Length: 596
Image (cartoon, rainbow, N blue to C red; front, top):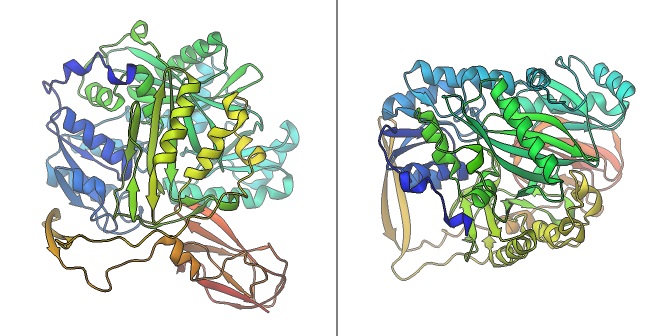
């Protein structure tokens, strides 16, 4: 079986490799990189915010260094703090993971200026491909047609209105320095342009630290197909096949698979060649992904992600190639040991993202909180890439991905069946998850027939019948007592001491489901109070005291886990009281307004 084989695994030698790698990230991707370092005998150093002091990636690393702060802006997005951690650790390389600084050329240069290797592409390639506008121009120079769009940043909503009038609606407004659907808004009519631009700027700034936007035509019935590329510093560039990432909601991927199904092999081969042309054209080195939209038998260049993708495991499963190992080897100056002729795809792999979100009613509300139970599925050709264990807490300050369930099958039908079996076995308690939604997707005839598109989940699937996550049972303790981990820092370096003590009467923490139950729903039937369904920050108030509102009308915008959520009135009436201000942090169930 291909997932168990890798012709490069016999070469896991540390000769010429790094001695210590600092992983400038958190969650499951930090865990993934730390494990790859361990496989190669490389010391792995972690960094952490105050919020992540006891996180899984910190526990797993050989060393860990404090960045301070709670939010991403106060910790993982502070170049000075990470560079200081590099210097304290003595690391000779930095792996950025994905998100945060993974596609930030200034960070890559700051790392290099400190005499440390950045495990990723050259800063110049990041700048060309990270700026989605210059990336479009690079694709055209490489002979690859992009999605119709603009070549200059958006300066006002009026430009969106003019583009829509000229090219047709809908129009996608996107973060020029982002990806993964963050900072992207679909504008379906001229009247929506101003709000969309404002919202996209806020999300882009919060997630990527920059708020430049561009726009392009949005295809309602297209598929999202991407190509994994690998390039070394010696002039070799190859692709490792395709992935289909069309099962999305709010432009966030839910399920990915490799290879892309139900597309003519000649078209898939042409995509691979186009991806290599784009990568080679910008002097790319290391692992990267070139994304395309596929519609009506044709494909269009969308963007290039100059980093490792969340969905990289499905490519690993069908090729038998460890992509993080390849990243480390390429960054260490080794030439690729693979040629394009060596790449053979075997079977099908499917990845399901398990997020801390409640999909009941199709709302997909972020659900931060403590994880009481976490028992991923096991079995043949079944893999779990996670960033949490039972007892950990999903923070509202970061992305809510708990882990990724990945399976392999000799064909697509077998892979779908194995994914359904694995999801049925997986247990997560304490927070709501997207497992039920993934099961509904995999069970649908459209998915089985590969007849879905990027809009399919939102337009065709009905999640109204999905149950709310039940309260998890209270975590127990054995007769030996409860393990307590005591954290200590010496000169910013983290140490951990474990103690066992009897359980105190007040030790039990309520599950997220129980916490939500204590407050009225923001859409509750006729409730006079408008309450938030999750923890987050109020970033916009849409009403004032004395305003008349209708049931279902948004009254505020709440940012939770870097996503904006409208908080709506549960009944019609007059706003009698507003209890929050912009910038206030609120908890699940908190009342933000009263309707008379």
